[in-house]
Image 1 (cartoon, helix red, strand yellow):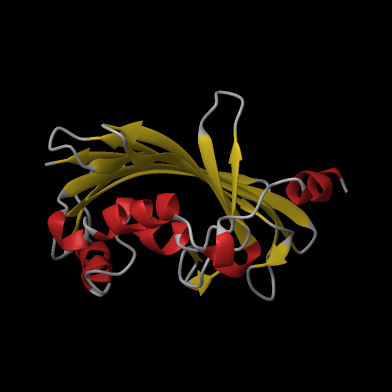
Image 2 (cartoon, rainbow, N blue to C red):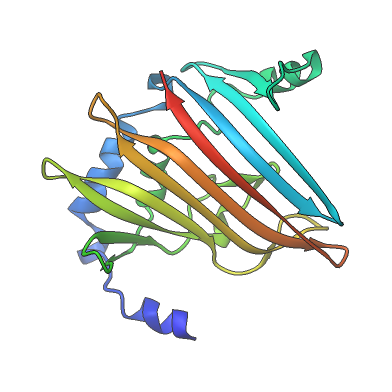
Amino acid sequence: MALLLIAAGVPPIGDAGRDPLRDKIVASARAVPPAKLSFERTTRLERKGGGSLTRQLRTERWDGARWTLVSIDGHAPSERERRSMERRKDAENVPGYHELARIVAAATERRTDAQGRTVLVVPVLPAGSVMADGKDISAHLQAEAVLGSRSGEPWVERLTVTAREPFKLNLLIKVTSFEQINNYRISTDGEPRLVAQQNDSVGSMFGYTGGEKSEVLYAYR
């Protein structure tokens, strides 16, 4: 009930849903498509469930056209692991600032945080925004984008995505909590870049509670 009351006090965006500030963010995000990016992504993953704990350190490279699996737990990938990466559609699920074009366009409210920064509120993520185990879970998620300003132009410093309610990932797994924090930074070429991502989810299967945590770092080339 407290969350509902807080949401009710947030003013809506512009007349007829139009907002120049939001539109500037969307336009700048569209200006940096995956084809313009080249980076290495290092993921440190921890997964718990059924009394077991697994950890993995994985490094992948995106060169603007295709993915390459660099290493798993510090070792060169096997032929099977490399083939699995090659089967992925090249431009699918490439992370970056460009993803905000879709997400921020769905913002319907605006508020100010304790530091005086503008926050755009997305009540429901658009379809295709977040995938988990091959399933689109966007309809179960909401987001808040904290804005910064550079030479008078707005940009997103941080995007926080959380679950709107518990939901089923599939017939067996129920997700009880989900949080993803994306941090962005202005690069040397003046464009905002995704530099770090933290993921934390908790769920249950067959009465057992488990979860997954990951920290992802991006190094641009």
